[in-house]
Image (cartoon, one colour):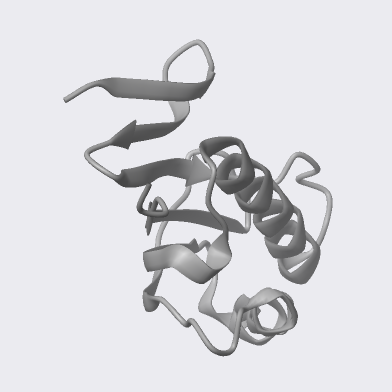
Length: 118
């Protein structure tokens, strides 16, 4: 089985494709000055781009893990999520509070999606 890496960076790759699945690295907002809702919307835009590059889309998300620096930001994060979510193809999801690597980050997201069958 081949492994394909998308959006390589210094210490990680944005996504890895293997065995019909795409594994997303922890995605953070490009603009960390945004509030949690804005950061989440930015992250979801990036997720859409990575999934498209891999040949799939959000309707094929299997699971998502969301890390919030402060659970008080849950409502704002959920507003961005709800506006983006494919209501007919919701992934399994977990949301936890966690100390993120950069104190300006309010949200980080990772997930797994399936590629379409050839």
